[in-house]
Length: 378
Image (cartoon, rainbow, N blue to C red; front, side, top):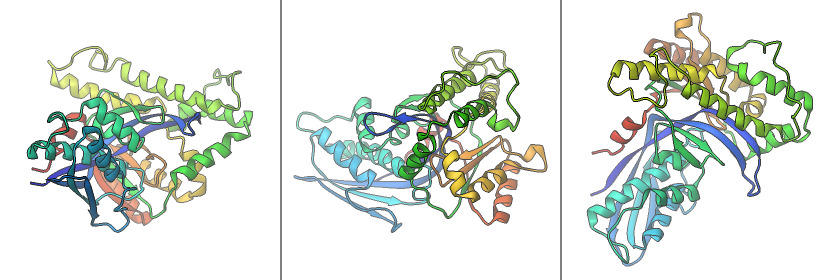
């Protein structure tokens, strides 16, 4: 019987870009957050003497060959398990293609999860024994397929470092109303990185000083304090300092005491559900107050002025209670998102986007427990 999995999406709650590594990738620090919006990935498996993988989709933009991330994940998993099977993959697209929501990466992770269930139901063994992929094996396969794939094997709030593929579960944020803005403009991630490198290759001290002074206050629209002095250590590679900056921001948000009277980390709140909710709600607010931002906005917004207008539209409201808690570009784009405390605020944001002529998608953030509870379509 086919196995269908909800292939959930993600946003980036802050993304810092560092210098180019020896392997050609940029160092990154980001906080991923999974969303309820999803594609559907269906795996159908039959025993076979040789491996055969076929892929179909309801969307002509989805590659249906060996370059597809789900195809790569299935092929690699069969190799690791030393088993053979005839596997059919069908991807029902509901998410934007190349929209910064991690749809392709999520498809790969969903395919792995569905494959495991199919292998177990058919009793297909490897050359030695019937087994599932160990957690580290799945993460290694995910890393080989793409930098954003591993996060979807964890779900919820996930810290990503390295090139984004080294992932660590973080304390969960509350389920929060989310409005995705989906402009009809494509953004090339490789080009965005090249533009970033070009922006900082000159090593302009003035630009880097301005950036260092601005970053902690970006989400507040206020000026830096007079006593904040630029670092004398700024160099041509100063973007690398933003990795440490975001890491400190995340640490301060997740470790500061909250109104419940306890720390978000290091103490079990399970005995008091009210404190759990209050702590998580304040955790999101504390995270936003650190001034987290997405570095890609520096290069993507100037080339696409509509994106800046969309972010202002997501954020702004005549009524403070309808304003976004936080709004930003997701990944390198082209999707942007706004997080809202109430359903009414999310409704108002969708209305503002409609007046701007920008398509939107309504969803919510998905904590880790809900991510796994809702994974399989039974």
